[in-house]
Amino acid sequence: MVKAGEVYRSFVARGGQRVVLRAPRWEDLDGLLDLINSVVEEGALILRDRLATREEEADWLGRTLASVEKGNEVYILAEVGGAVVGSCNLSRRSGCRSHTGDLGIAIKKGFRNAGIGTEMIKTLVEEARRMGLKVLTLGVFATNETAQHVYRKVGFREVGRIPKEFCRDGKYIDHVLMAMEL
Image (cartoon, rainbow, N blue to C red; front, side):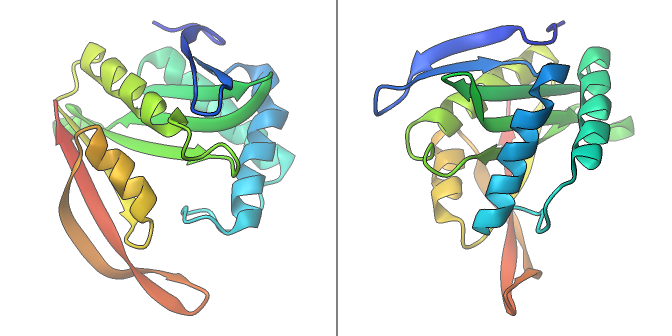
């Protein structure tokens, strides 16, 4: 079991930045709040479309740390120069789907296209195997071709689409469903 703050690995990203991939700890609250709110403010293609309050983020982090401790979730932060610049998670489903996990990821603007997301997802895939998972799933906006490219590169493939599931700025966007068998 991974302990709070434990390092999974470190590497040098394109551009020469040293990146540390590690488990979250309570002290990451403000860094995580800054990450999610910066991604929301940018209008990035994620499900969240409004800023989080510190209280909401604290509630979420408490639930996340408890889920990680129970072994139901893996959560990885990307840290550059002591700042949180990315996060990703893998949540085990329950019941007859307990052999599957759902993946999510967010990376701060200015840190994308540097290999950070690829390394985060590869690390999650390794952890999924350790957890005994057999299938990983994720959803992505159809217009987010960069993310889809990264997912394909690590082994995900498109398995379906939900037409017009999202509406952003008055425009409907398909939801692309992707999966990877381990």
